[in-house]
Length: 265
Image (cartoon, rainbow, N blue to C red; front, side, top):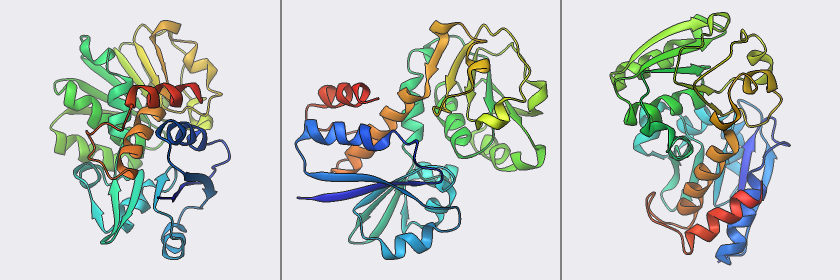
């Protein structure tokens, strides 16, 4: 069956998702299309009312809109109010948050280590998914959230309360160097405001568009996890959804599919 999918966001020209999905579809032997379309903030509902694709990957700044527009939401979307995947069924659009899975897989080896303090840079959609992923493995960790505007951190503070994890909110200029794990979700212009410290912990650089070399270079190279790793794993779960599988069901020949997706980066 021929299916069509899109990745939606603004900006979107930098997206690696078309290459990653195309690589997966080739290994799977399915005749599916996957293209990038720029959709501005506030325009998602109007776009979805006229577009009839089978499903969508949702990137910034549309993840909150996608969660609100969906007909059905999975548990993680309900918890975070963030959706990065929409899949069309006879009953309407189902919303999923596969970022949590992507972050969990990217941090798989790190989360087996002793971690008491986690720094999350930013308080938006990806930051909330990161908190959920890490809190599941490290429920006793303290989360230090660093933001540009303290008033914009209310959502992630509320999420910490639901997860029953400890958190404290700080301005970007107070970013420290005593945490065992840092997750960067900031856009490049914001990350430039961070003070420069020599870091001993691990970094997941979820801002995979690149350019924030000063932050990355403050960590030992063997302790930096590229954001593309998260991107591939969250895309794998999207492919499972697009194939009509359960979130934990493997696609056919899944190791080869994953290898092809990483090779496409």
